[in-house]
Image (cartoon, rainbow, N blue to C red; front, side):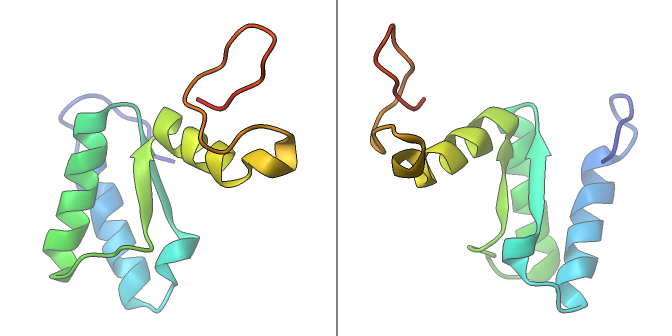
Length: 96
């Protein structure tokens, strides 16, 4: 976890750490990059690809909300929800 102010190098720190982990043989599916905004999430993933010179499709990165929704959709049936749902409504449980 990196907590710091604007312009302090959080994105650079995270992307270099991810590149290092991948170069050390850590499987990309064991790494999770989370941030608060879509812009920051896109920038993190773009920088990782730029550092490594190739896309990393197994690497998960995005906003807390987007990744949470992805996990819920992936396991919706186990939780008793519809997998293709996009929102929570009233008394009918749906996945956002």
